Length: 86
Length: 112
Length: 125
Image (cartoon, rainbow over all chains, first blue to last red; front, top):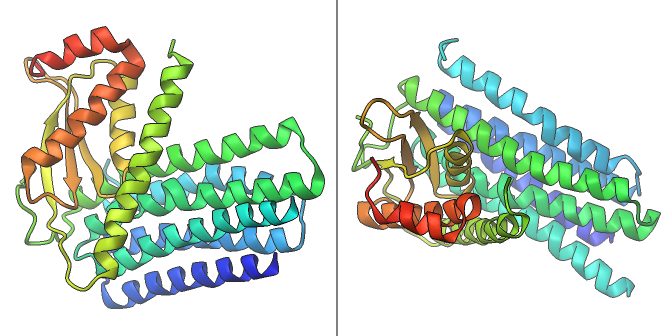
């Protein structure tokens, strides 16, 4: 089980680092918004995996809350991109 | 039994993480912001739901079956899919309207 | 009310499309050379209700390789139109044919097969 958990965490960390490398090289606002979404999903995935290794009982609550609240960050970024216009 | 369950969890978690990695790699190689928003849906539509399903299988294995947990799983998966697609719609529209630099190879462009 | 069996059939088909699109993009980015050539195409819809239009826009977005960047509502004679950014848009007809197939399946889910076939026979107006 721990092999699965740490392999998954390593893959997700690699994905987050690839996204951050992209932010370092391309600084247009749309790319930054897309990468911030990706890093959010990587963070949720890493949290789920480490919680699974610890046999935590709240993981499904965390997953459903992350699914329901994650839209706020993206929509705020969309408003920032258009400078507040809709 | 436990070997089968471990295998299922492994395929779901590592497979989901590989979808996320594919999206990240595609983001690294895509040429404009709109394409980067475009390739994100592979991670959100498949990668994270697979990982949540793997976590659910592990949860049932360790803590036993409960209908409430099944509902939470469906809320999480439906939430990730619907949330990410609506958010990407908003983000794509905002990116286009804010005048983001498009790939010069974008052709045909009916919005131009 | 939606038919639950048809909803599950459409959901399963959409999941297969998401995997197919992700594998296509994955195969492109891990091999040297990039075949992406983005395009933005206008897609006039046969869909009528808000549910059909928003489900269509979300289904397009959730498929890797295509994303909705604009929704024009029905104005006068022109049908509701989606503006779709496609990652592999070398051939406009191929992109539109794929999206028409998705729309046909969506209308089968919401209206049933016979009314869907009748709606898809004519050009949207």
